[in-house]
Image (tube, rainbow, N blue to C red; front, side, top):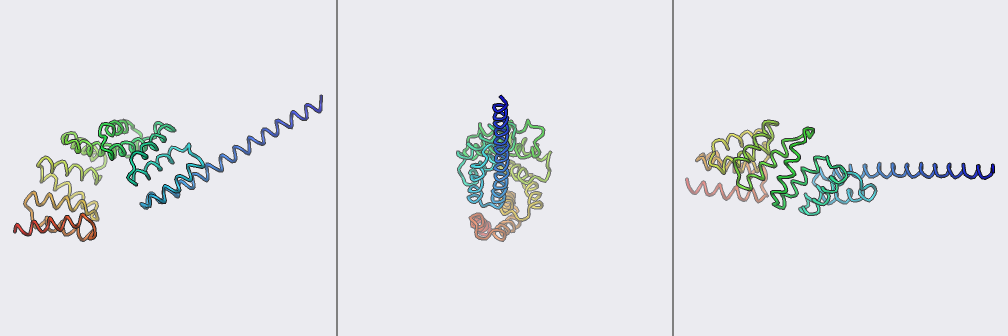
Length: 255
């Protein structure tokens, strides 16, 4: 009987040892996956999206049950202009953690990329209900852009202003509100918002391009020419610079 008891105790000890080893392996895999994910995130932030995706997929093989990782993979696919795959991964992130609001906002962005406006609006509005979300100006501004695309300019302006109430120097909302004002013939108000925006982001060629357009619409051709030249100065080899030069020539031909 004693022999059987000894054998039984040995089995329990062996089982405990195996469980301990398994737990340690899982922890090591998770730690390795997180380190690989962090490297992928560095590449994402640097705009090296294919390198990022390569690292993030390696991390997924090690530990797929990471909602942040699934969201990161979705972002990589979105930046690589594959919104369908991005949507799949944002949904995976939300399946793992359904209150992970960044993934929901990104899901809205992916739907917006596909011009599936109703689905984008649905996701953004859910995000705006999360009182703990640290950057509520983003979904509010995103709603502004969607409604602007739908030519519902009153709603668009409403959401851009809400974003600016939270963060007055939020350039994305200043730009969106200015574009909305331009679409509704409120050009002086558009100019004010764009001048504010270029003060905050003086290296943004697109802001100067829109400011030049607004000046031209308002008949301020000298200021328009100066702003168009600034676009070329900031990004001389871009298609935006080519457009700026064309618009500048049109102004000069009028004078």
